Image (tube, rainbow, N blue to C red):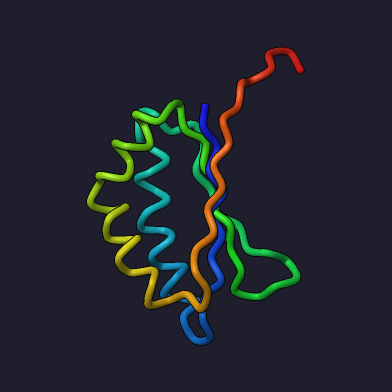
Length: 99
């Protein structure tokens, strides 16, 4: 499985627009066959700082996701809403059963 952390620092005055765009990409992403989990969170001490935490079955599932219209819309809308470059981390993981 592949875990993605994508960090966004939203510019002043763009919070609601970012949240609207996040909702438009999150809901359909959670329904994708290769998606295990897809959530986003705001840092409790840093206003307008968000992280998307995604868990995917494999790279093929990510490739399908990145080709969707809603993901493409999101990545084209976000640059106008953020104040710093997006930071992305990818992790390959194996689930430990019974832990």
